[in-house]
Length: 139
Image (cartoon, rainbow, N blue to C red; front, top):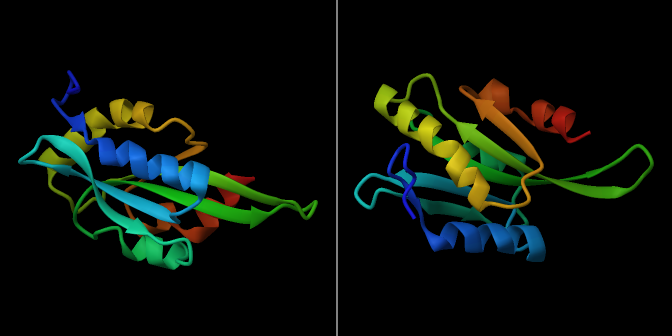
């Protein structure tokens, strides 16, 4: 189903990979991109559970927008094992203006397809999605 605001549909694989991450814990992160030819959001990369935050951050392109999901595992002060699912809207300052507009106008519709997001981050540079930010927002 296309998004009325931007004309972007969401590939079924996007939802399938997210459900695998959420329910089965088979992925650490998922990077999504908008395929201009197909006019839809598609899965670009899936990170295995053994990968970490640095691998996730390295998967975000320096000059292009992306959506991303990161599954952050941590231990609380009470020594409880917890997990938070982060949605990252990656829109670097160096990306093309048209691309930033398309990603911004498609974001809410895309997020609705992924039921279970706990924290949202909007980032324009690496500092805004740094590990310290992830840690701070998880609590």
